[in-house]
Length: 124
Image (cartoon, rainbow, N blue to C red; front, side, top):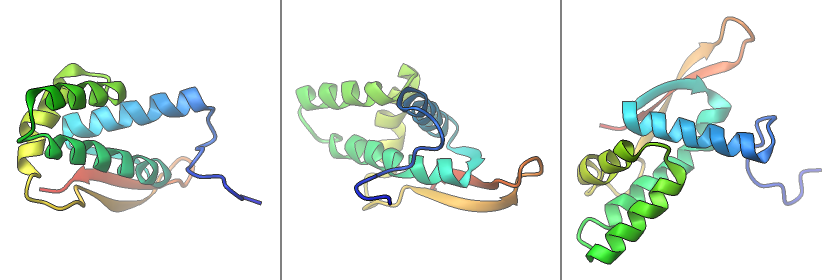
């Protein structure tokens, strides 16, 4: 039974899963569109949404709060340039949007193993 088992495990241990999420989030914010499996996209989507929401909240905040939010984002991201892009460009683009910053578009099964492939992208 799956009682109180929250989240997706993706057949990985915790450290590998955390590294996978960090890399997927960083690549998505850097390229604004990635191709991945459906399970990985569904696992990463809420994490990306929370990062973008926190970046949008600090647009008009005090400098101390901005620094703290950037440091929190760097815990997840693997590239400092992506953090600057998130807070300077993407937050300004999504400032008026009340959520729903990402979209999943289905591509069909992968040829090798039949895994359902999707495009995870930021909404324009």
